[in-house]
Image (cartoon, rainbow, N blue to C red; front, side, top):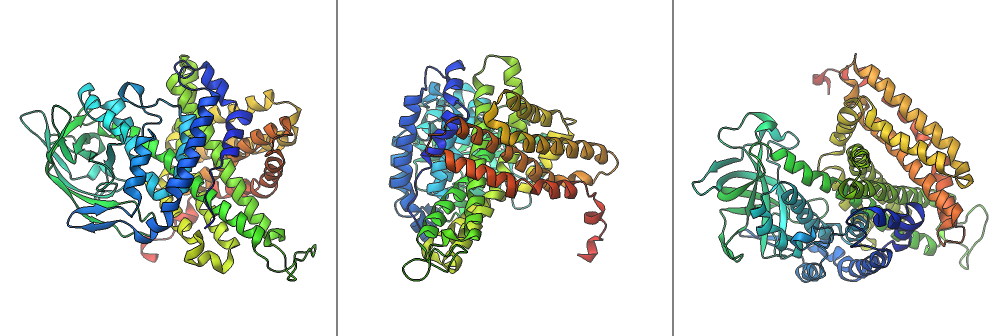
Length: 590
């Protein structure tokens, strides 16, 4: 596998030329004091050094060695504990954390790019701090002052790690039927009993303590999802002075043997009267859980982009060096063959990979801007608009970016030919690691159902128009540099709105239509969203013709509009085909 290089040039192009993020930081209250272009550049540079030199070299051995489990103890692969200590000591766990509890307070528009670097260097490694950051967010927004004071500083510092305990053997997406119970104790704590599965980082040797956020039901809770509460359950109880006390009443029963992300411990956790403390209000645990899960869903979207980026870097390097065959132009090399990058089909694959990777990175960066606006802007109307865009885009970033991420890793493997199927080149690991991103934190089918059901149909299309209006406003403001993209982007925008309106009308008489159309319509939206991102990148390239990336950006944008965006026409037809072709076959005929 080629050495990983953090995509700093593209990140800077997005931050500075495409979105002018420094201007956003300067005008948002609370950000101008903590971040400026020089600080951001230094953080990105240091993040690149860390991920390239300390984390990326762990990836292959981590996959081969995996986590080891003996008598309830999980050992991560060689090198992981020391690398994690370096990561924590550098303050990276708390990069976006609240400064009141020891975090660095960096904006999401900066932190998300670092998160992508980590996931590209080693997806397994990146899952440990990602779960910790999500747990911190849930505690910050929902826990009492006492719990925040007790746990957040040690979590942000990386001394302790976080884990999220939702899934049970019989309850995956349907959390309303969980069986884990929380019985009140006399001292205000609760006795937590039950078994959770698929718990990322549920047990490991990277930190002194692991803080589990556990979903459970009280004895008198209402049925279904309305009766779920959240509890903070530490591996080791915490004494009044902050020191660690006795081991809590739960343990790891086993770890899963998985297709990929083998260096990430995926655990079965058995709670046997473990002491926990309620986070937020009783029976309101899903609110706290979704605060954490929506953060994780954006992080998973970045994992798709990250695996695609690593695959592209490997494939591009291989294509420049691999001598094989003769292209139509016949520019043969010294052995009667030439680099395969001269072959049109190899270029098609590389350009598809690049278009998906950089389109996804731009969409994630655009979404991160909305998160910063929603958090820091003092203007209610602006915050409301940003929150609407976050709600609309979160399932898309999670699902569309990970679907295209797997596509991209497979294309990279294809460029290697037979070597892509062989262990030593690393491409098969990326395919395996990328695959989980379409499944966890809510499968991509569930994301599509959320997108079409709650976000589009549930809002009567109003959330969708917030995004399409943004496209229209940008086109009105863009100058001659955007002329090449104006017509095709308007056509794509109108096709999206027309399809959405027909789905709103059709769903009124066909209750199965949203479910059968969901994935196709979410893909349609994703391709239009990437078209918007590519128009903005190409416009920036036209306005900065001397930028080193300008030629590549323009060529990739032209490729995207000619070769990939036309897929929306087929997706429109499929979205509107009705439910009968899916639902008419009797269940027993399958």
